[in-house]
Amino acid sequence: MAKITASVFTSHVPAIGAALDAGKTHELYWAPLFKGYEYSKQWMKDNKPDVIFLVFNDHATAFSLDMIPTFAIGTAASYQPADEGWGPRPVPVVQGHPALAAHIAQSVIQQDFDLTIVNKMDVDHGLTVPLSLMCGQPPAADFKWPCPVIPFAVNVVQYPVPSGQRCLNLGKAIRKAIESYDEDLNVHIWGTGGMSHQLQGPRAGLINKDFDNAFLDKLIADPAAAAAIPHIDYVREAGSEGIELVMWLIARGAMNDVAGRADGVNLKHRFFHVPASNTAVGHVIMENK
Ligand code: DHB
Ligand code: FE
Image: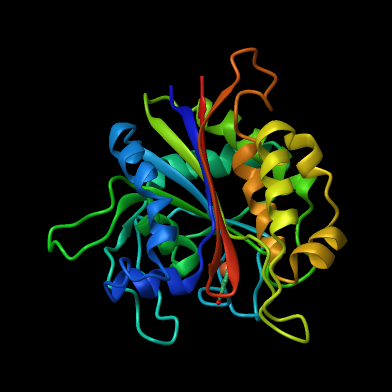
């Protein structure tokens, strides 16, 4: 059977993609940030998944404000990097896993979460920057992402957005779905986006390190408490775009301890850095025991 062996949590910031693509990772501003992912890149090599279930948000790239699915699962065979205004990032096409994605859609919808099925979708920095941070980057012409990816897009752009509790519960349903897939696959689940940031209005540039670190503490040790944080607290404390953090709860909800299993989780890595563009960067790796 398929099994979730680990969860990865990371910010996604477009400027990180630009720094990678322009070869600026060794510059004074960026070096400390990329240092925090050295462990992670080695860990990815040592713990190579067969599939990554990647929870992310689209930034009005694939979905305009004409159509806003709350939860959308990618069932396509491949996904093109999107043009976000400066052309698509020069990274490989993302290969999907249509068979597992269709199985998860079937199982999760039957567990009462109404997912939108997406058979064609371009993927923006919300998905490609976490992949670059964890897996490295071309220039090698034969560079490929290490495995297929199932993109799972969450609306955190236009209110109303899903609650933390619903995201945690959805993670539990995704775990059940994956564990009922009849093939031995090692699956990682990634929760991406965040941390505190506000990109508009009088509070543009807001970063709240205390909130961010308290969120990481709760995410790791008390996911039920993290799931109970109301939207208004994210907006007040973490800025209008800090709500991206709610997506991390989907990945967290898929882990052993949340499923009530005695064999819990191991924290493998925790990293926090300020600033990166207009935000803080947070990153956690957990393994199921
Ligand atoms: C920025 C943009 C984002 O989409 C995000 O999640 C964080 C930061 C930015 O432009 O700084
Ligand atoms: Fe974002």
